[in-house]
Amino acid sequence: EHLAGRIAAVHALREYGIKTVPGIGGQRQPLWPQKLFGSISHSTSTALAVVSTHPVGLDIEAIFTRQTAVELTGGIIDNSEQRILQLSPLPFQLALTLAFSAKESVYKTFSAQASELPGFASAKIVALTATHLTVQITPSFSQNLTGQEVNVRWFQHDENIITLCKATL
Image 1 (cartoon, helix red, strand yellow):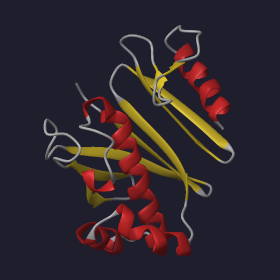
Image 2 (cartoon, rainbow, N blue to C red):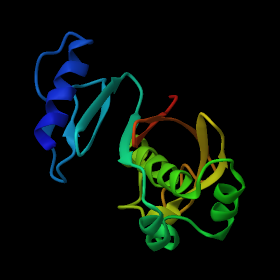
Image 3 (cartoon, rainbow, N blue to C red):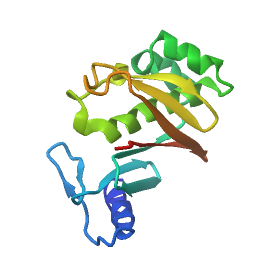
């Protein structure tokens, strides 16, 4: 999966005329060429990469089973987020997978500004629609970004969901 993600990154970088593989940083993060930002994600049979001139985060996740959703709910969302997900027209396990993935995409987008490795409580789901989630950044993620709301686009592909977050500079 790691190799497939790097291959996807090479293809994404070709759109900018770059034919090299991103380096690997101290925390195994991709090191993108100067003035470019990117994100890699992979699931069992799919690898994706995106490159942009703005910070960007991408994630792909297999939709949680009902049992997995029950087990992980408290570690991913708080009570107010749970109400938002339960009020959406989506099945709860899909909505929870989206919350997990959206928070991953937000982290990837803004990781350079994160105080430290943030947990799931450092970003809160404040809205969920058929095409995007709105995520609010909390002080535990970054004092500079506290309160900022970020739109994360999403779509379903077979039994996976894909989220994409792009920062505006």
